Every structure is written in structure tokens, then in C-alpha cells.
Image 1: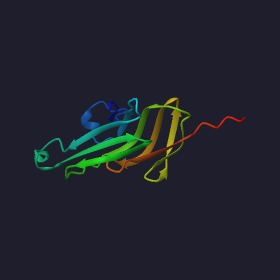
Image 2 (image 1 turned 30 degrees about the vertical axis):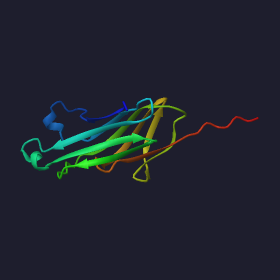
Image 3 (image 1 turned 135 degrees about the horizontal axis):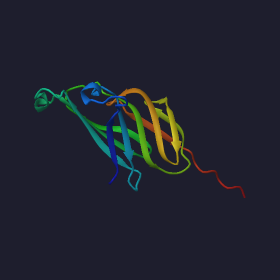
Image 4 (image 1 turned 60 degrees about the horizontal axis):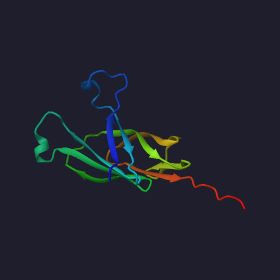
Amino acid sequence: MGGAIIPTLLHDGCLAISKCIDAPIKLTAYMDMYGHSEGEVYFDDGISNDYQTGGYEKISYDWSESRLTVSSTEGSWDSGKVVDEIVIHGYGGLGPIAVTQGGYSTEWTFVPGTLTVKLDSVSVRDINLVVTMMCAEEPEE
């Protein structure tokens, strides 16, 4: 497997990391040739040594079969971080006809090869994105 999911801190208009550390994140998926990608995000308080005794949050994501899900979580700390945007590169075909997060329809755009999904501050632990693809029409005889 060669695809990757990369978390990025959204920091538009923010010049110092200390001022925007609580900003939402974006997950960007780059699919491998099999349409799969995976990645992790890690958070701790950035101050103490509590991470040594489980005071951290590590979340693993998996994109496969048109679904982005949390594949595992570790740690006892809750960062409170949210995801406001998901971008999936390498999307082929005609594009989606529906995109849902947690069973609810969500805002999305598609340009050939890239699907961008806007979310309403979904917890990093609650990502459950499902994409329903448009199928090519059967040619008429």
C-alpha cells in the first residue's frame, strides 16, 4: 500500500503557531493505485510528560472502497480537535452523486481527480465519510 492521509492545521490569516494551535484540521488523502490510503494524527498537551502514561490522542484513518473511517484510536487524552475539510486526490470516474458524514449529507465539490468535502467541525474521532459514486450509463443499442 502506498497511499497516504496527511493532516494539516488550517491556519488562514494566522502567522504564529501558538495563536492558531486550536484551529481545525484538514485531512488530505492521496490514493495509491488500488484506491487506498491510510494515515495517522497525534496530539498531546505539548507541555507535560503525560503522554508517557497515555495522556495523548493518536487516531488512525483508512480510505478504501469509497469510505474514510477511523481504523483505530489510542490514548486517554481528548484533544477536542475537529476536522473542517477532507480532500481526496486520485478520484477517478464520473465523480460522486452523494457524500455523507455520519449518515448525514454534507457539502462537497468534485473536479476530475479531486473530491473536496466541507464539514461542520466533526471530531477527529468521529470521521465516517461515505461516497456514493456515479456509474456510467449503459450505452443504448
